[in-house]
Image 1 (tube, helix red, strand yellow):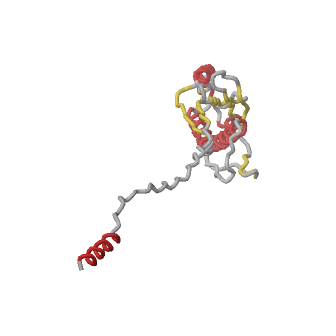
Image 2: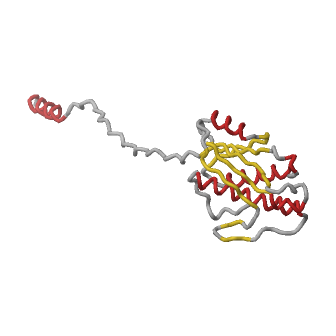
Image 3: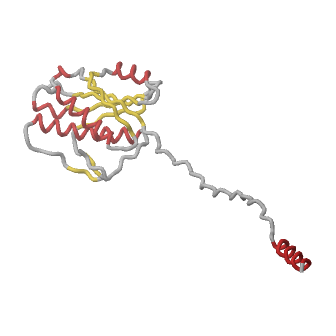
Length: 203
């Protein structure tokens, strides 16, 4: 009996397996997809726009300068490719040159109202007023582009449209100069290789 019990005990003890300590197997971390750098928008060109009011005593209404300045700057600002800064102070050509030389990136847009007629003080001569514009490059102050824009038909989307009429001669001339200022802005953008969306309506 003792032998049988001993064998039974041995058999039971033989079935008992010692538990080995659990080994934690590190699971490989899932690789996060590499984030591709988001392409930043192309840096916008900086434009500083100012006007020379030196001919204000030549019979040209002083508020024409503000109208032309705001109209040109507004059209430039329609483009997402530029950043516009308007200076309300009188800017002579010499001032524009100095400002351009002091700038590292910003172009300086200089505007001036001119007339070939000495009768600008007379309402009959207001239609002779036109806009002269010059764009100076930063640092070198070299002329990037320049030209004149006259009162006349303006283009929108490649179509020549008529100018607004009605009101006093001073009001009509002011409106025409606003459109001429927008034409100057579009010429400037083209010279700077900045696209102006054709679907943006003129102010």
